[in-house]
Image (cartoon, rainbow, N blue to C red):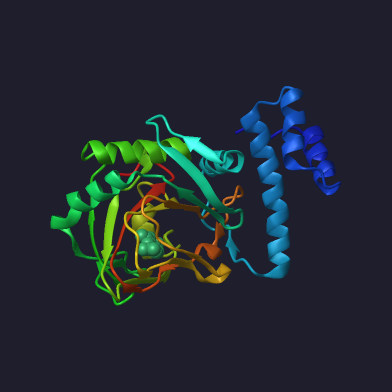
Length: 292
Ligand code: PD2
Ligand code: ZN
């Protein structure tokens, strides 16, 4: 993505410092001939820089620049959600942007999947559920752990028509190619089941590097809620006091990197215990590069 010249950088800085509205600045830039995505990229890079300076002062967000990334993906993904209240996908799904937070980058999408699609995904996975595991940070190996009480299974990329449709929808809204996705994971929590707070990106450790060597880091998570849960089972972000309650068909999107390639530790998240009923979700993790 093109970094604009010094005149434009000065113009962006001056206008932000005068309190101008980002959308108005975008219009002026487009009118002056700057391609829209370039304008969005440069405006976002500047506002992220300000946000980082602010957060460094308040110390409320832990940022680390040790895990460099291709930044363009995140820009394009955020761009879509900033400008639309509704998204109609190519396959005709009417998705509603129900909630967004900019830092960390979290978006709740209603009606991401139809109820029939949710039911079909559960039915297709019920016979292959196995006890879930976690990745050991030190060794990179998967192990059983009390941190994660659920059963799960994976679909391979494009395993069936439904999985292909969901993957295409995710790719369309994030602008990240289908091939960068890990296989769709299905999780089923029964009463008492939980997933204690964790990061979805891999740590910068020997164990973490085992997982990032081929395809790079995870950059985005999308959790799709496949049923309504009677009590409990919210996805929680403890650092920012955010709880998202499962709603059949909705999807929670969050990305972990800002435009400078810094990871946001406020994406720490977990699945709180299911108190009554059960909980079904599908999780998609997207990588920097093709997933191999
Ligand atoms: O079940 C959840 O809400 C949840 C919470 C945290 C799922 C995941 N993480 C995950 O699949 O990574
Ligand atoms: Zn997670």
